[in-house]
Length: 262
Image (cartoon, rainbow, N blue to C red):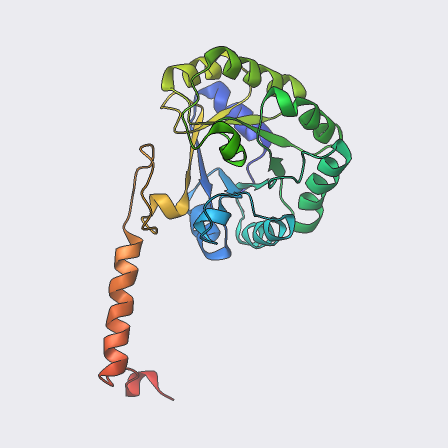
């Protein structure tokens, strides 16, 4: 039986220069495929608000929805580390609320860790959650939950602030940090500067690992993809063709045939 990826595994990979492959997924079938394909981390992202629910942003996603999706993803996984995204306003109101919601993920969905957005502003929250024995992945740079405050999904270029944020989340106890929407040279400097693994999304090739949304990399969406996404398959087109063939067979009465009847 293959052992599960742990925090120590990720630290070891960074030290050895081995790249970490992460995927964002939201359901049992795709989590199982990703796990069997050898990904190291499966993040159950609050991006499900946009990818699965069709919303304009992530802000409406609830704790109940995140716990549900994390639980079904974790059931599918035997190898990867499963990390749950803490949704908007599940950790910002108070340290007590943040700890309670983070603990809920571990108790009710069997996630191995939680992720929350922000640098210096959430360092006390990260410290409080980790003090309770709950691993935290940080997230700096472009913060989808702060889309209105940032004026849209914009690349973040303030090197001094980004370096400071990275150091502060590391000092607060985060075991890794997602770098989103950051120029490659700044992300490379952050990766060299801190001891915890960096996971990039739109942050260049020098991060310790990379993460993409499974729907994006498999070509399952009709939305305009960001520059940083590489599409590895065209499942949407294949699915559409398959369904068209099914509709045609039903209407022409060639399905179901005797072979598909009892």
